[in-house]
Length: 297
Image (tube, rainbow, N blue to C red):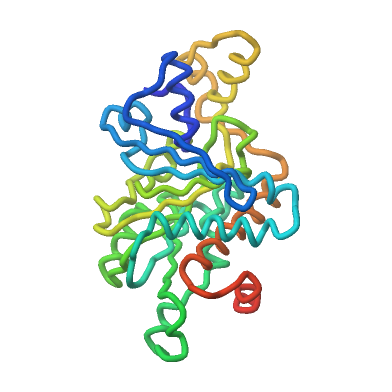
């Protein structure tokens, strides 16, 4: 099992290899470049690998956003399209309504990704039902913010599950903030997977899983790392300096402390908008970034 926490499959694979000085069978990794963005796909195919990495069997695609962060020409448009293409590949031939579930607590900036993405999602299910001819070129999209257990008293999986049973979507896209092992990836990468998501797992506060097993429909998870677990960061920094720290003792003293950048407000806002536009481009065929700007007002 991993001694250091990360929601990113590419990091979990690297941590395991570092800790065990060998590659883990049942997991593969490949890289490619799309429109100037590096796209890394980790595929977990074996049960042992899933247990060791604490990642369900499935595909985990990480899009690195350096070009967007450098504000290169057309980088927002191209980045949103890359995210849309990955989403469409993982969703496959899904026909019917797609429910976008924005997880997390909007009152806490690093955890507000789901809320901000839902705010910029083009919701069309009600329009498709009432005016099918006028909106026939749009996909059917519904959106939901289930909140968090501490403020609602209800687990996110129960809220999402109730809505799934009521409207019967063809698939769910679950949006959440993630935890990374490295500050270099915080608000700099987006991970999309077809294995569902366990909210809060990266910071040691795992809740009920949103997956095909719990909801009965395909669940695509999309998230961005916004925090680093303090113990994981300390162990990595010590290792870079040529030292080793005792993981158990470090976690005992650091507790549940997490670290986030000082510019987290603007970073979360920018990358959440990019993710929302990626979802919109994937769900509504033929629209452009400029169209989305108009529709969102």
